[in-house]
Length: 209
Image (spheres, one colour):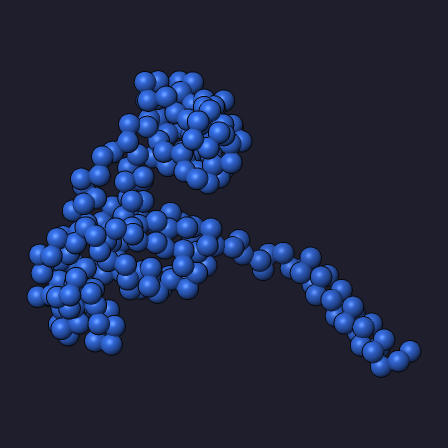
């Protein structure tokens, strides 16, 4: 047997040893951690968490710059003069990421002005499996033909729905969100499946919620 053949045999032997070792030491394994759904009630939409997230799992609503009311509070609060009057942009070289500007920013008030939907919202993650239809106690969920894209989609009848949220809890794709969670997602959205549990967002959050 040549040298490469011997190495292959040794590698297989080591692999088998590891397999048997793990079989007889199951108690050493711990259940892998899963990211919990974040509580966004106090989120001020500062965007610091989105900047540090290594997997880009956090997204801030895209109309921040458009909604800015030019009140100037952030300029006054910045300890390092990093915020410019030119559309209130930030000088990255001066910014120390202290979060003071976010604490005084009036943009999060917009969250309270977003109309709350009457029913849970079905997101683009829905794969039309129809499992939610049978689970709805009020038979408020049905298949609807969409004339725009010429496809059948899941819809919720606002006249029948009582917001019991059974569909939200049951959906295997997490594609149905409650009215309150929908409003929060308009400000910030977290992709739980992309999260690697690094907790960088928690460390930098000025609110620590």
